[in-house]
Image 1: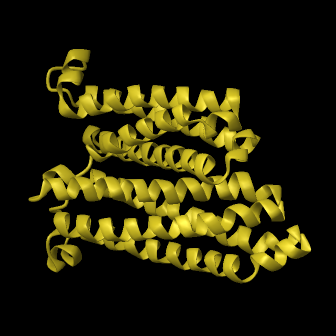
Image 2: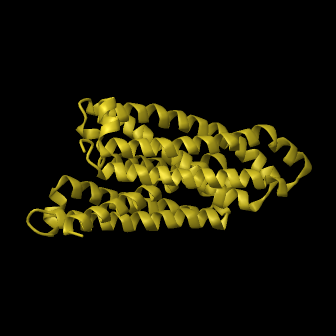
Image 3: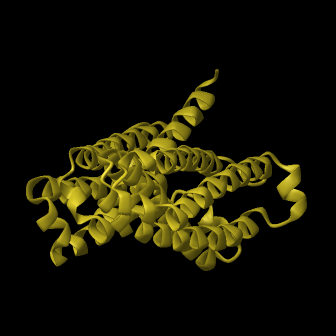
Length: 296
């Protein structure tokens, strides 16, 4: 393996971990603040948020080091910070430090923090900044209609983050508690929330695909197009799992709540777990697409 191959593999790894950390943090904070404030006291949910910040900081540091390797005149800090890639990496690092402050407030104040307006404003600002910084390292700026692509890319990242982050907190934080009344309160709201996220993902994804790929021939005749088709195939499986979860919520949740039968939640747990794993696979495919050249 050549040096360039090693650097490319490292770049893909950083994109995967960075995207995953961002999605879990942004979506997790949104889930806790808007749908399940009591989750701010849950140890597993706190661990999820804390771990996402730790991974995000590590990914940002790794990206700065990678930018130093690509610097034309050596890994001096001034060379890194003057390069566009390095500036984005440095800005992301600072935003991740601010994200740590947001999460520390959750650890210290719990439910009071996520219900307060100042905390929500700060969390929203940090999430917005991280989403935009992440989009700046993609292909949206290279299209013929950069403005449209940038907006679509932001909505795509926001939709994926809201969905995947919410799924993570739902499957790791909420569902293991097996409290039928709590699930009955949160699951229907998240089901509707996830539907809006999916619509945003699909609409923005179609716009971005057309802007970047440009033609059916490029979609089926290039490696980038093949990666995109793979992502779409896995996304279709995610939608299938999501439909199963939605069907359970609409048809079986009320019976589970009335009987307080926490054991009957198992099918929903399995469906949400499958949906989460497949959504992570979609995120990995998206990370590989970011580091690939659309023309090849």
